[in-house]
Amino acid sequence: MKFTYYFDELELIKNYSVMAAGEIDVDYRIAAAEPDVGIFEPWITDIDITSITLNSIKAGVPALNLSQDHWLYKLIYAALIDDEHLLEACEMDAAYEADI
Image (cartoon, rainbow, N blue to C red; front, side):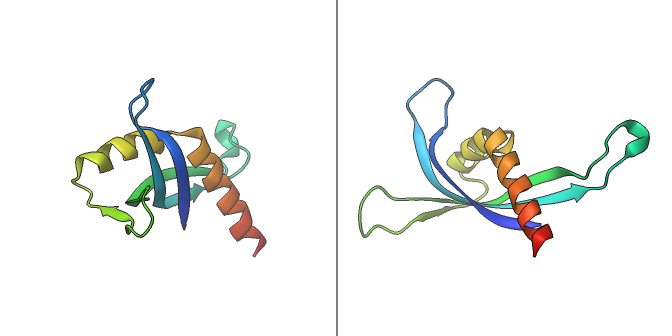
């Protein structure tokens, strides 16, 4: 499954005022329930961030698409990949797609 996730005031370095805003393209998979091991409902797994775009703070300046080898890409990826808000967004996207 794929969707775009928007972030703002992302804390790039924990406990420091280094913030970012933009959007990421996210891929994830929905794993089947495994009742034999106590997992009774499908769950989100294999979350991956496939692209990152940073917003500009200045009007008229285009957004910045980061390459995957850019040092900011790595910081943003690390800050978001295990974020509970991203997992919740994946769960909401999966629920929305299931309703379609």
